[in-house]
Image 1 (cartoon, helix red, strand yellow):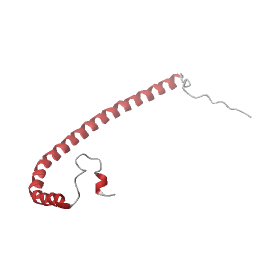
Image 2: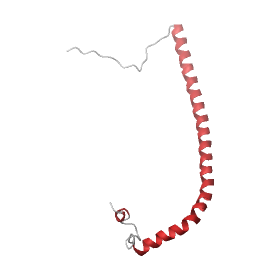
Image 3: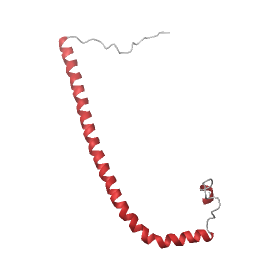
Image 4: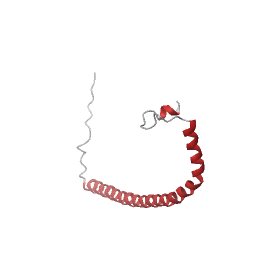
Length: 108
């Protein structure tokens, strides 16, 4: 696959030839501007990266708190269910579950 195939269909690309005078000018321009643009991008990129990391850490902490609370609620529900089962068993009120599937044996 050629580079021309990748950019086929983009507006403004039809008349652009890879290589040739335009390609050489673009390469020379990039070589001249790279030492100027890279430090500027680095100065702008570093604070943005740090801000993104800070937001990620805050989101992580909020997630930890949420899941800790959810786990605590779930554990409380399990403890209550176990307590109710033990109390029903002790009182002799153990009733079969109504949601249990009925097993039907078919003899051929």
